[in-house]
Structures are given as structure tokens and as C-alpha cells.
Image 1: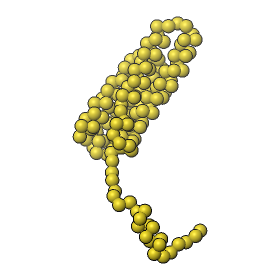
Image 2 (image 1 turned 90 degrees about the horizontal axis):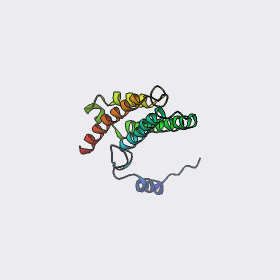
Image 3 (image 1 turned 90 degrees about the vertical axis):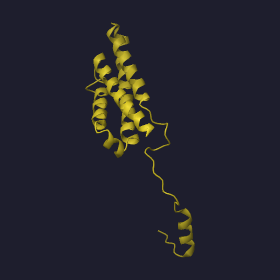
Image 4 (image 1 turned 30 degrees about the horizontal axis):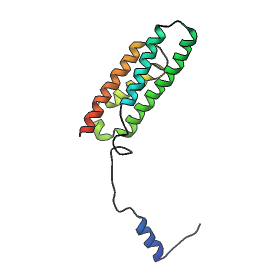
Length: 143
């Protein structure tokens, strides 16, 4: 390890030291987060469940299951990004039900929900939770 001492090192350190500290409620400028991504995937999941129920072809059904599982995973990932990156402690203080909504929504998209089943009602329940999260999201964007 090389150790540098002296005035040059101190000058360089001062030049590189940040002059301004900023804080933001999200990782990137606003506009990159949106519950619409989760909603679109969840709508796709619901449509696949409906088409699966209306079709007896085993090849079609196998493809539908595969695609529905992929879309359900995407729902979970979009929700997780919102939950962990966009929403911050002040949001959870103002909307104490938010953690529960995210927990329920991700479980509805998971193995015990749309990812593991073909129930249209479960897909509708998932969309309802996403709609509640969406409402809160847009309220936070106004503030």
C-alpha cells in the first residue's frame, strides 16, 4: 500500500470532496417508477387465465402456463422495485397500510397466487391491490 502525505494530497482530497449533499425520494429522477408496469403485466396474467379456461388444447395450455408464470414474476419484480426503491419511510408513515398492500400483492402474484394457479379471481384480486398501490403512488407524486 502506498501512503501519500503532504499538502498535494490534502488539496486533491478537498477538490474531490462533494460540495453539495442532496437527497431524493427515489434512485433516479422522477418518472422512472410507475405502478402501470405491474398493472400491465397483471392484466396480461388475468387475460391468460381467461384464455386458458376457454381452451382445451394441451399445447396452448402449456404455453399459457409458462407465459403466465413469467408475467406473474414480472409483476412481483415491478412491485418490489416500487416497494423498496420508490417508497420511503415518510410514505409508509402517511400510508400505514402500504406494507400490507405490497405484501398481499406480491403474494397474489407468487406461487400461492397467479404464478402457481390459473384462477381468474386471484388475478382480479391482484389487480385490485395494484390499483390501491397506484392510487397511493399518484398521491405521493402530487406532494
